[in-house]
Image 1 (cartoon, rainbow, N blue to C red):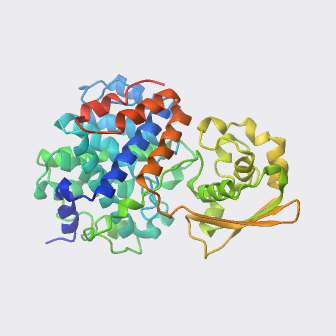
Image 2: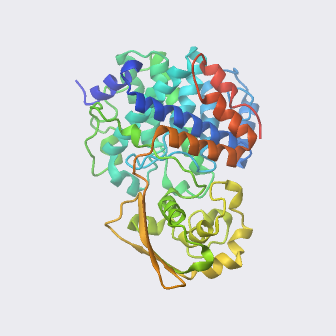
Image 3: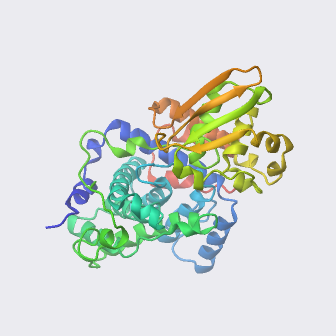
Length: 432
């Protein structure tokens, strides 16, 4: 019949067949998503969308970060945008995008209307996330380089599958939902640096809710809007991969990475490496950093002028890391910091070069000390980290962004036993 059969099989996979490690990642992603969403409530783009929801009205079906409740599709739009507003959410490097901000808003919004359990919502995210990664691989790096934003494109398919699973779509209806998503999935990288970037995530989440609901209502679509003639893959990439097969043993979702510093993920390996090196800023005369060439056009701003540009500046972040600045708190990155005389002077001591032998999750180099010693440094974000270590790191992130309420959120989500989707939704509503 159709090339999307593996996606239909994945969408129908019993929750008991999802590996424990993968479900552990799904639960951590839920926590990370809620941390980022709660922290993003005060961002202007979040307020704009909440105001739009208030002006439109509608049934109060689903929870919204900062409240009040809204229709499920609007709630997904607001929550996806709000949780990506700080650009501090999880990243999957194979997928080339952020998964939680596009998929969890759809899963929770639909889960609340369907009477799902918290565990059901997490399982739907795991399934939708795995599907989005595999579609992202199918689209390939060429899709991203052409200017598309996988968070929104492949992510919309993941949101649709997660929402459709929670609505109980049968295979015929799920096929229709995926077909409808093929004409709704959109998002461009030209939005980066504006409110349009987090809006991309919200659009993906809202599309997922809409396509699943319409398929449930009986709307028809192509049998294969993803892989068929003139379908999504054919029209959105020149170099398609081959990654739709069902997981066999290892799930790709297990490679999820979490931002523990409030800056571009391309700088995180350097930050971790410099912190591990144990050098003091006052003792360093030179740093020679080697990074993957793709990051040179992303996060190598030599002289940042704003707090936002600092987040994409190896030179400033290197000094901040060695000085012990709180790189995990978004409040650290002020416009005034771009005029810090110590960081400005130190930036001249740093050279950054591209090295094709360094992956986009690695950083390497040397620190030259004033006493003449050379300290090599290296860090690989792909190195395995236990679920327990990740959970502790996310607690630190929650406390840095939210203060005591962050600790309370971590405690509440430590166990999902007995929780339903509406109980999860209640955790979104406290306003900043």
